[in-house]
Image 1 (cartoon, rainbow, N blue to C red):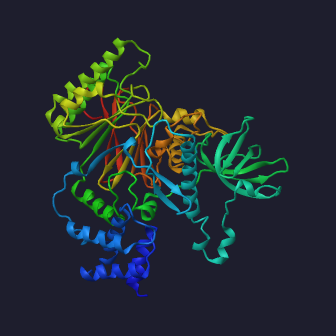
Image 2 (tube, helix red, strand yellow; image 1 turned 120 degrees about the vertical axis):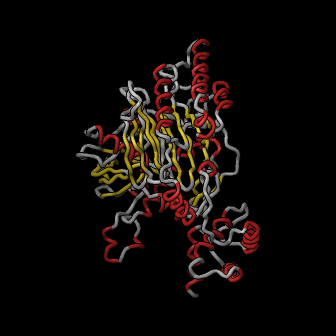
Length: 542
């Protein structure tokens, strides 16, 4: 087998595909027909593998018939070559706002060791099976990341180093082995007797925190998955020696394995395509910004003053963002049980916002506006993920803005190669209320870091049990953070912050109305955000 054959097999293996002799011969035949150079082989084969896995009848063992169909399709598109795009790119044509209820559902398959697309219709009512499946998917995704970690992967180490490896065990392996030390991965939960336990797919064990001096970094809440090391006792409990968050996997690593899977429903791209788009963004769109505002209280006159100042400031400096994301709450007080007059005022406030933006034609015609509902806003449901704002409240905004988007909470933005997740929830207070075990004695800055670490390590926006914070189980995949997004906006009434963790940039823009008008400007070319302030009494950016 020559080096080209090995490279072809390697690329398809990355997509969980195996190549028989006939399929391998067909790929070599395709490469010969287009006279592919050695430098182009990998990118062309990766393109073939990507398109192959998009086919409905694609199998793990590559079918020659499907491969031929893919090749013919690519020939018609003129897409088997790898041309360098030099034309001017329009950012709007590479910008997609993705509603949580429109994302395809992928479940983890233990048999195949990869994700499988769910073909049955999803419902808001869910089922007992879907509730179990949602939790199992979270555990399986985290476990496969843990087992790929260098501390758990024996095949990557010389034999003399294998003794240093930590081996994961299951709760069923504890029985009859009192006095031995174990490392377990499971969910922190309470038993019917109210005792804190660690639960995995095989059972549960009661935890004893009496000998634990200090937990690892992160916020350990009921519903979190944790790595727990301890000694199993005669009483059937696990005396904890150490507890930590499961290790997070970088976006690049996850994409290298599952890059062929279209998690967002907007078409998958290869790592090679992503890297080329990244270069284009850095070179051609270095000054492009996206604005993020939270707690845009439309029932406060000061909010409209602040928005006007922001628009005026952009015009004076000839600086226009490509997108402005406004997160709720769009009211400073709950009106869920309010009178009809309160609801009418709520709608009038949105109409006033539409009138304000329409006074600035450059914004109303060319800027994309995204409106994400908050916990106090009126939507069809209050369980995560939340539906978009009711259309009856947003009719004037839709009529006056050329690019108005009203997605769910959370929602996602696909911008070129980047994935940006937006979540409006008072997450810090909710997590702190539900910490179990040992509570960390840390400062505010550490709390912010711990919150970010916990959410990303858990690969989920809601690492809490259903009895604490229920979700629509059929749409739990929309709360998943795997692969890691490029950026995550945790819009919260808590203090603003920005943290980059495992390559994911996370920030909280803070409430728009406070001691000053505050928001965040995200720069895709640098994958970084800037904190922006507009003085309450002046036009200048302070």
